[in-house]
Length: 255
Image (tube, rainbow, N blue to C red; front, side, top):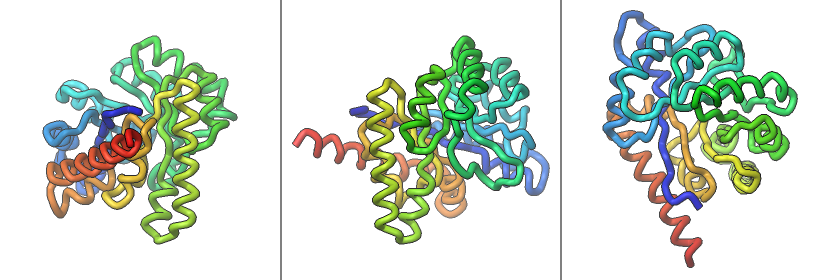
């Protein structure tokens, strides 16, 4: 069991708000600094092909300004590979990307993209980045991620979170079972397990309690809550819920 659970805070949607009006405010770099002060262990930024939120300049400024690790989310394209190799973030998470989607809609198909994706893992790994694949909780995708040499995966937990929020308890329980199985199996075959997408105050507990998961990456919800309660308060509350769920899980395992 990983006794400590890391929190990565995604600042993409601070940039989304800025870009809706233009200009420089609100600044995602300021948000990243505030997140670090509130207890975030890392900052996450997704540089999309269409630059709809985070920009190239944001990425440069984030790397220069923050003292905690930066995870760059990116599609598996030659352009993004060049950017990642040039700027050398601490970690890179490879995600599927479609221009028409509003947000990432599901996991990457590592099985069918095996040969293409292996080059990204190899090149980024040589540059010192920790590379993860953003995938569904599926053993075949875990096996494929391991076979291309990825040291970590991030499990897409959005379907579970949506089902729980919608009151579909049986569906949520089944989806959570899949996540638990993926975490256990992924750890068994040597992968570091992360999770993200759709996590809220109401859904974080069961995911944080899964002992093999070492990192949660949360963005949109925290930025939304910041409108009402402030970013520092929202991150502190999420951090507290994560830590409580993990502590309870450890206590139950000991008993």
